[in-house]
Every structure is written in C-alpha cells, then in structure tokens.
Image (cartoon, rainbow, N blue to C red; front, top):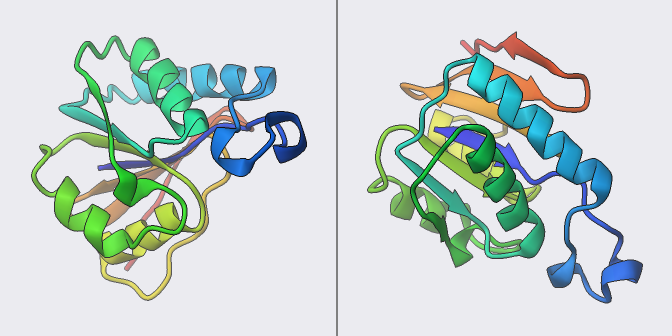
Length: 154
C-alpha cells in the first residue's frame, strides 16, 4: 500500500472553502515529481483510491498519469477529512495489493498507524508517499526534496 498526502493546494481564501481547494501550480509540479520518484521505484498499481476532495483527486490523477496507470480512480468518503480511518482500512482491504491511497492529514497518518499496528505514525508532508509492505513501512518518497529514503520500523 502507498499512502500519499495530496500536493500543495491553493488557500481557503482563494477557493472559498476548504472542501473546494484545488492544486496550486507548485502542487501540480510536486505531484509530477512524486510520480517520477515512484516510477523510479518501479511502482505498479492495482488500484488508486482517493479522498473525494479536488486536491486529492487532482494529485491522484497526476500521479496516475506519471505511472501510466490506466484504471479508474475511485473516490472514497472514508478518506475525506474527519472520516474514521478504521472504515477506510476495512474498505481498502478488498482493493488489491498495490494500492495508492490519496488523503489528508491527520487521517492519512492515522490510517498508516492502523495498518502497521502502532499507536502513531509520522505525519506526511504534502506530495509525500510512504510505502507499506507486509505491515511495515519500506520507503518514503518526498517531492519537496526529490528523494526516496528507506524506512524500517521495528
């Protein structure tokens, strides 16, 4: 599973309300950088699931394009801000093995904590991905610094 926080969005003042925020130009570029980093890691996806908010969907679309993912991008209300991560975790368990999940903080890191079985999980920056394989974090990709780093939690 690949947990991904959406890229940078315009401010609430510009969009009118938090739910309507879309990606800024910098956010669009960051999503493309993240896609390149994931491609370099040879990420191939079975499914993409996103919060229904525009900034998450747009990030998912840009990453999908960069990975040549041809499937549908599913939206899930259980990934929206304020939703319960346990609901998302149970729904995601049926979507395949290599799933990219696009969401928001603090929900995306709460979902990470549930998946790895820890009380807490580091918060993700915008346009950051944390790969979890067999219940353990294996790497993180950060668009803001253009790097991938190994992660091992014991």
